[in-house]
Image (cartoon, rainbow, N blue to C red; front, top):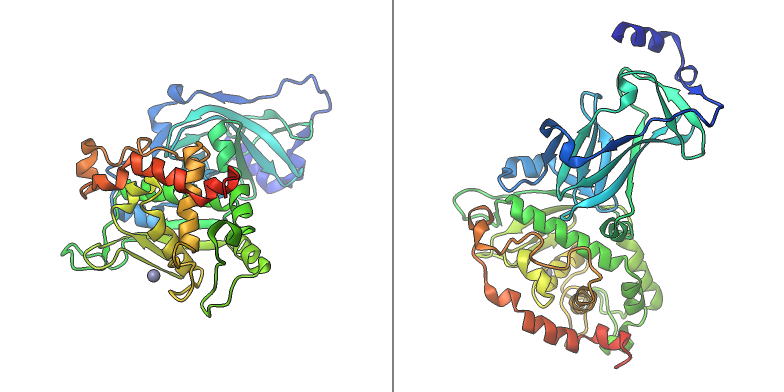
Amino acid sequence: MALFSALLFSSCSDNEMINYIPEPEVDTHLDLLLYDELPSTAKTFILALDEPSSIITTQRSFNLKEVLRAETSADKDFILITSYSAKPITNITLKAYLPEIAANVHIATIDSIPMFGQVAFRPAFLDGETSYATDDSRVVSFQREFIPNDMSFTVDSDCTHYQMLKTIKTNWTLSFSNYDWNPDGNSTWLELNAMVAREWVVIVTNLGYMLSSPQYYEVMNNFSSIFGGELYGNTGELFTNADYNNFIERCFLSKRFVLGRVNPAYVAGLGGGSTWGVADWNFYGHYASYSGWEAISHELAHCYGFSHNSNLTYGNNGVGWTNMVSNLHVYMNTLGDMPYESRNILDTHNSAYDEFRGFSIDRSKMNDASTAKMYQDSKVRKYFDNEL
Ligand SMILES: [Zn+2]
């Protein structure tokens, strides 16, 4: 079979290898994968709790607009589907784009992929001539010896969580670094672990979701009437309508971030260029709204070039971009409008994970009564509830 296919490759163009089948009644193939029934060798995890930082900092990377990604394996024998979602994604469809016919071919469905799960799937067209339905209602039949370089894959899902993720417009590519960490503990940065990396995934996803939301757009376009003052840049010049909208749009442009964990013995956060780091308590405190977002958004504002002279980094008497992010988070999260709304999803604070987490929990960063009060006081909530 291998020789036969190889001969086909050397003697035929790709176009000639695709057979159009005019009869719509022809049976088409669609693999219906059930996660629980896949062989264990086909199922792995990224950011598993015991994954070493040497793997996290070299092999883990994703784009926020592509939390679920399908790609060809290194040996070109499998389609690898990787989830950077901290919740399961259900009802997944997998399609292959065939440039020869400029159409997507329906390859498979998968009932569910667990959080941070990875599935390796060998498509039927590698093992024999297979007929598939296309997006444009054709039927194509083909076989390949290996997955061709120009074949790309798309995944989709109609599950509620994935539909939320699909609204994210921040085109951020995220990876991880230990920066200057050394085991002696006298470095500005500490070693990442999988729990910190998982929480970073949740933080950037929730933030990307907020910055892509219609609520954020509306708040930024009514900033001074909500917060009693305008944002201003590094020279102190007040933001105009165009400046607000330029900053909204800038966050949608392609940008790379390298996430880290700073050493609280020296700093609470570090940010600039692609460097984005915060200290331990932020990794579980962010769910409470009043904790975490101040540092997270302060460092992000540095990454977008704002200095301490701008109120995008430090709010001025409650008027600032970081104040707005906390206010928006408590509003949206309390209403359940957030991809990851509860600290119990990853359960990082649970004492069962002390060994993997590697730092202690400050209970004052997870006071639900303080969050409820912040929700009541939130200027963003008051604006949307017509109480301003
Ligand atoms: Zn700063």
